[in-house]
Amino acid sequence: MKTKVLFIANLACVSLAFSQGKPNAPLNWYLNDPKESKIYGVGAERAYKLLEGKSSKEVIVAVIDSGVETDHPDLKDVIWTNPGEIPDNGIDDDKNGYIDDVHGWSFLGGPGGDIDAEALELARMFRIEKRYFGELKEEDIKKEEKQRYDDYLKLKQDFEKEKVKTEQQYAQLSVLSEYMENVKEAHSGVFTRKTNKAYIPKDDTEKKIKKRVGTILLVYPAGELDKQITGAVKSLSGQIRMNSIDADSVRRAVVGDNPYDMNEQFYGCNRYEGPDAMHGTHVSGIIAAKRGNGIGIDGIASNAKIMVLRAVPNGDERDKDIANAIRYAADNGAKVVNMSFGKYYTPNKSVVDEAILYAASKDVLFVHAAGNDAKNKDIEDSYPTRLLSNGTKAKNWLEIGASSSKSGAKLLADFSNYGSTTVDVFAPGVDIYSTVPDGKYEDASGTSMACPATAGVAALIRGYFPELSAEEVASVIMKTAEPYAKSIAIPGKKKNEAKGTMSQVCISGSFVNAANAVSFLLNNR
Image 1: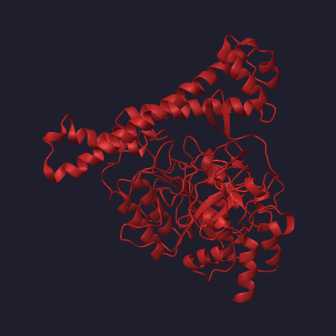
Image 2 (image 1 turned 90 degrees about the vertical axis):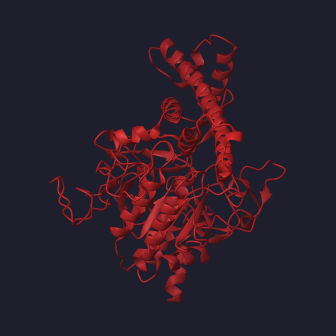
Image 3 (image 1 turned 60 degrees about the horizontal axis):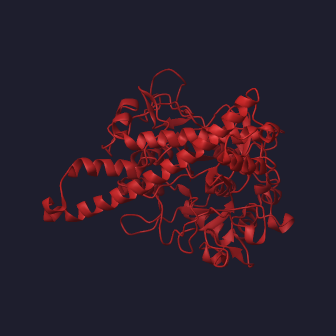
């Protein structure tokens, strides 16, 4: 599941996640430097001033995500092109196992189309175990299978809890969507702040919704709210549907692979944009949107090329797809891998871990989003993770929390996961204005945005200091991160418990800073 692109608003007791069409913070604030503006951006502009007159090597950044709009005006010049592949000739010219993989690959498409909605991993695991145990009762379970049965009962409990939660969210958002449709029906198909104000509610529930929506529309565009509500209802509907059916059978019919064969590698298609490229396109713009072209935004890394790897659907990604995407990135020259996704269940962790170790042997740096559930990852980690099945920790790994352009208690994103021993550093992830499909731009928030902000810094460093290994780049980013001595609000805590320090939420106790890293490297190498 992609880490949520979100702005939280309570609408008639509904927790709603949506992105805004216009920036809610200074444009390109994530490029700022706290030493110059007191805004905790990544210091990219100051870094480039320090690097004036110096040359850089190209760095391929693999974006494992939902897909990317490769012809977006701000991205078309920074998309990686496979030098060994002749476009659209139906031949695997470079003999890497993938036909016409000109800009990357999709592990979510095949003869039957493209996967958009997917089941949660929890639902897939529960269905497999339910099929195995059938109607057996506890007294019928063999002694050697008792632990598996107990795990199944826990899965069942968790699945049913998640099912109720999702269905409640869907019901609440459907009510909100219906209200907005009623407003449009009463005003010639138009939903605006004005038509909402003029609308006469049908009952007390609509009166409450109207009042709350009116408050929200004082700040956020009506058209964007309408679009995001519609999208959220569609997404939840798809998730409910996929959680209730045999998602593995759907997978076989669409992609054509065997979802249980973890050794299967050469499947998929070259439709790497996919049916919903919003998330991946937004992520890519933060990393590498064309700098200085006079349009849209400026990405962080002027030397980066985006390799598109579609492996993250609207739902939980599959371990097999992530492992294969990692191997593709490593085999085709990527030096940084951006992973703005995560989940809390992983049935085939060893497959992903083996791919991580393989990529480490090829000097690849992983940058991973910590997640948006305001959880302490020291207590409950998400996957993939640097903690490998063999008991070691991947040293070529950075785990990223999200921060904002605010100061003091509002500096950290209130949704960000954190961890004093599991999250490395924080980076800009609130109200980030970036590229989205159809050549457009939108504001979005999430550790999904903080992750590419850090990946962009890593690519910048790897380009200007190519002698550094992945592990050394990670070390420099940690060593030179910008400290913050004042108190912060720990995400997810009650107001009277939230006051804390940066050392309580991440290992470095600091914020990613490209300028500090560049200055350090120029003076110490």
